[in-house]
Image (cartoon, rainbow, N blue to C red; front, side):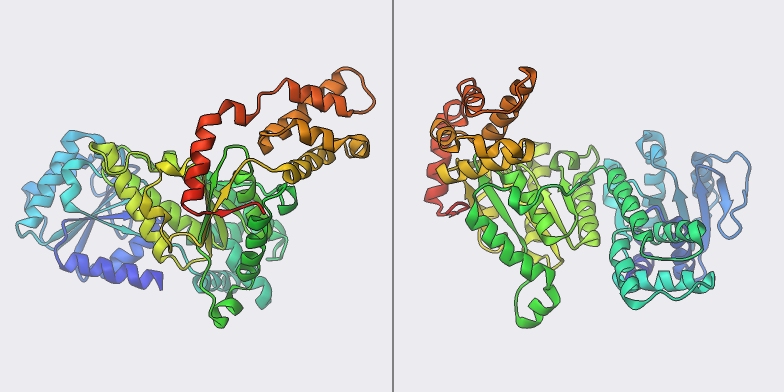
Length: 498
């Protein structure tokens, strides 16, 4: 169980004399319980921004208007460190003040020299000043697993004497609550109870709404609404067939594992811009019937030591806690640009890449990764080895048959009544070298022009005129496309098209 693991680690670190333990969480009440249980008779001094220097047990002030600096000075000069736990909350902003950082470092050095004490910093924001890096050990409170969530729900039902929830609904609640903290779960249960005095299936919408809020607040992952389906993809038949097979495994993962099937890891879709890579990522989540999370690798980079790696760990932990889900990493080549180079940024990127590789190699959670890349020549070779992704697909410019399908999809989406009157073969012959995004843009332009000209219907010539006014991707990126195509063919990536 998560609490027991954290508690035992915490107790070992205190007994071993680790000077500063940084608990990365906002569940302060839970932390208080754990600290009390592992203190083993040590006296606990607490300081927080709201109340200052307070009594840990009663949460009442010991001294009025006692600053953090004053507390540290008193502990240092009055010989009050022995068998003490110094608990610091809400000190994020103070860890950017050189004077305070210097004083905390002084306490840490005394502990290293034999003072029997531990400094515990509790914060949901990880800030590690360079000066304290060697003294700090980070502990993170994991997300609750399904059994722990069920226990939390059952405790709430018992406390408020509610009707028991049937097992199948309890399972649905446990899946829906995955990725939320115990604090958030209890708040949502209370809100559901206050609404109509019971817990029912309609409360699941409330939970999903809160989960979206949580992801937004985290700022690294984004939950993408599921609109696109596999039928919105024109062509790419090999890729679609592969995804349908994976979906069958994914939706029946327990039976598949019993049969001997490995947990699906994910896929890398590389190739020409505007040819369906992002659409495929969105359609995958819809096909698998799970949430789609988009990881913005650019948001991972932090200014403090270890912050970027922690952001990646948190993003992965959140995705795994919410799983089953699809984790979409767009433009993967940009995320890991500069690996192996000199300088601080390159070193951070190299560490991030190493962490990501390790996770992809070892992960066994139902977090299905869909990574997309325009130019794999910029990706490290290690990422393309077997074992990282289940498959790597190459997406090229659509062939005649695929352009026909793409054209039909986009006309049918906007003007289904006009589709039978459009000469698709003429459009296909005129649109060689156009990407899927090009064709969508052409149809949009033709529909808009026909509306502006007060036409009753859109005609073939409206679309042909839009084609004549558009430069195809093969014109704009001729040299790059030829180079990319040769690269994909030489690496023998599986073609997404038949």
